[in-house]
Length: 116
Image (tube, rainbow, N blue to C red; front, side, top):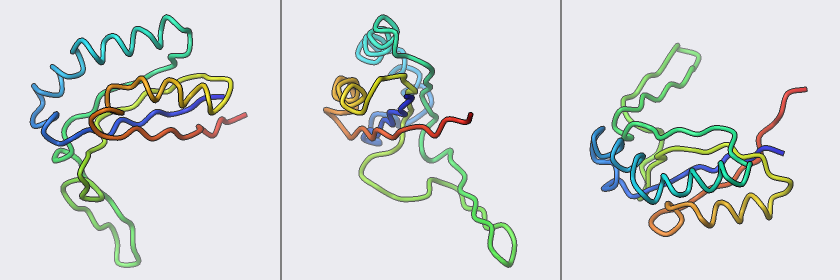
């Protein structure tokens, strides 16, 4: 089964695009990504640009409502994700606990709905 590991990090970790690139290429994230690959569970993943670059869209009866910025203000921002292939939730949670965001922000694990 595939699981998405969502990385929520303090905004200070991703103040600008250069900080995002530096963090994504940093030792902790590189080691984590390498461990997922070496274990054969890595499917895909990406870092995201800072939250202030987001655009939120809602479609209502009156048309499209577009707002600059992320959907919700929070202490952490969604900084990136991994898709892993794991046999069960316990294994996915094992990998989530090793995620660098777990010690500084939060990590969410969600099963992916697979199309048949």
